[in-house]
Image (cartoon, rainbow, N blue to C red; front, side):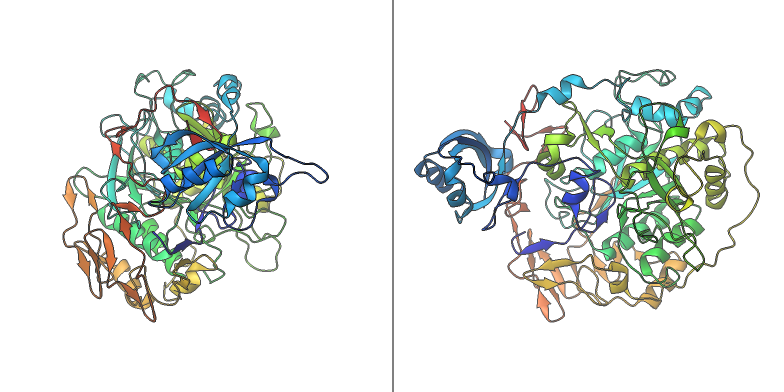
Length: 610
């Protein structure tokens, strides 16, 4: 959408994170290739001090703004470059240009981005499911998931709600009934070719960790299978609620609406939603007892759903960096652990990116409840997604797998683990499950503020009696500020920030009134939430009716008359049912493959397919 600036909400781990590049180049996907866009060159694209690139050719992937690709090709040739291959899937092309021409390339008005291109086939060639500690085979061994499988518990009959960026139909998520789409509440929900699909790449990765299962995997023979992709709870079902777009952009109001939907539909015919996996988090400093996002999560817990929240990727150099809603004591806050190349948990450590608690900070402490494998975790890849294209230089593993690090991955591991335990103990409450997982965790080489009670250890959980008790922490009122819940993470359109007590549609948000509706389980009324109708969203064969909301409407596939008080979305429109200027323009998923493009045996180069 032209004019939209996405200040990324924190998907915590491959994530919707504000300083996303820092996470990826550090503990996340790894160092991405330098982007060349706009008037300022990335330092990595300039010649070293004292060196002269002269006419040395530089391979680049060029992405064009809508309607400018042909002109950009001509401009590249005028700069002395060579156009090589058209890349329709990203509305761009590959090219080589003289190094000295890079500044002029950056200044071309039709340029959306240009990315250095480098081949990385060796990454795929060296991957071994047995020796790679982040492989699903080793992660399920380390955590003890395989012991649950041997005992006959694979998550069957348990539904896990995944509030994320959607999923794509890749092998591992295409088994009959594996994924059911809840409503698409993202900014992409009005584009038929993007609806429900993971244009960002995060949701697919999480889905694979939680409950992925390769089509070739054999039920009853999951343990010991190192050749086929098998996630933590391979027979659990995923209910996907998409809230984030191709750049990871979403607002707190969308996430709250998603949580509310899960609570109200948890026991719909055929549904058994017992776990909610949430990688989203903000840096809100608002007291959890008042915070609207934390309150929504609490209502899920009250309804019998374990809410698993990523602790955050803000590191433990400063105490008290848990994000919202992980800082709410009623949810299960998960930090990341990192293996030291053995299956023994005792020598694991907490990586520097994993957020810590505030033990000893002079007030009631809130640490992560436990940690789980989160570094260099291998899971399913969403070909052509933003993360795939931007961080493929270091994250690519094979044609179907991608590697990433963060507390998102750790939360996904625990979400799958929870489904295994729930199948074993169907009557267990969220509080009892939280107590069971933390009491059986294994202490590792880290402070309590970093590791909580220790690292997930399902081998112990399997035979430990269910704790007896109830949650004694006070539940909140939810009457705080929606804007306070956002913290510093806010969406911006045409230079105008979405702030104040307004939801994504610009509708007034009365926190106290919404809290009452959420407590009564009636914040959604048919397809209406906070007075707005979310058109274009469907789930399990049922669709949301209506195409407008009070004061705002989708006209065809564009924003028309939609405004925030004192500001407007005007000028931000859908072009061809895709985000104008987006890498997904003109492309769509058809079944489980790209319509009009063939991906099999493609060569991965730099940050784009060739």
